[in-house]
Length: 558
Image 1 (cartoon, one colour):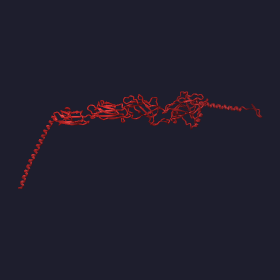
Image 2 (image 1 turned 90 degrees about the vertical axis):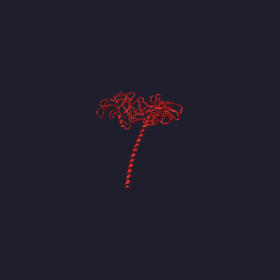
Image 3 (image 1 turned 90 degrees about the horizontal axis):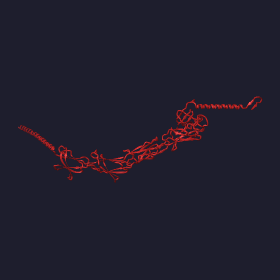
Image 4 (image 1 turned 180 degrees about the vertical axis):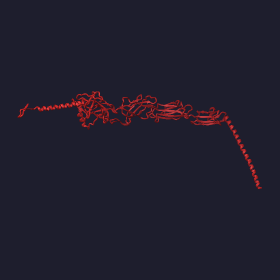
């Protein structure tokens, strides 16, 4: 269409402005395509600084960094991260995802679908409470088992394959992910909890950073069992019949802050089987006490409660606590009262329970003078009394009482020791030389009791005669050939040897006495003569002196 201007012959083109506008729009479109090409070239070549897939802790305070969220959302056009079926720490493999998939390629492309923010937290499977443990590591997979590697882009691109919990027990995925089906896989398990099962979740709506999709990963608190094995201390044989009550030795608390058992609370029991072995039910990790509530027959209970620490499972059954059970015993040892090193064999004792005559039994000492009583009933008093003694020993008349309590102990001990002695009356009769006071051989002696009954006759060998069969009382000894002389002595009830010596004159003693008498007479005679001579000389001197004095006195008178 042409319109002639007023006063002019040339025609006016009405389409020229529209053509100019279309040309400008084409140039703008070309410019946008060029910019997009530069972006893609920079992202898919080594022109930019080489990047690595790193495994590091990722967490952001989503509530205070809104500018970062906006910047990241505006700059990251990638989908739910990158997908790799064989991830490594050195290389990064990317694949193009279909719209709405769990992964994608960098930059703007086809319809990528809706992406959502994800927050994960670990919770106690039983209580539902968050477990504030730092450093628990997870990986993100699609349900086709492809590992998801997520990125941050500001100020530099960083890729993440592992996601670690904070000290609050949670973590955010570093970028939003597309709608789809995923699961978290735990690679490190926290202390006090078992390894988590893969946690599956599906995102089918839009979730922003301000209200992220929440994935709760339940962890089961670790439990384990206590094992015990009861055996005989001496033989090593299994002991049946034990039952243990388990109590918490301290507050048993899991990391979610829940106290599972209070200190002193009864939490279970262990009953041992015919092999002496027993297990508890699974209990939370911690320290427990085992009290022997039921003690095997004839055995003493444990002196102290057993401490057992339950630790995390290792794949093998926990090592059993070895408990050596000791039988309750009464040990009787019988020796000579005077000579303790002499043990008495063959002495008989009567053992009776609770004064019940029907339960009486007789036992005998062995070559070492010992009797070991086992298989003792609990809550029973045993009466022990000696009934016979070997040789000429006198029995111990004491009735010994020993009580086995409910714990299988006697006065707090597993074994009671009875150290007993028997007395023998030992009387030594010996003829000794009246002068030399030593044994005199060849002397014949007769021993009588107080009833004039002859007990024994013997000829001395110089060592005396030992009697052990005599009882208390009065006895006398006569020497053969001198029936008028009686040597009396009394036997007492005492453990020491009672020595009785009878003085006799022998030809040696007579000779010695005669010689001594002769010497004595000679000495006396000599002394007499000396004294007499001295007196005689003294008398003569006295007489001479007297005469001299008389003469002197007469001269003075004249």
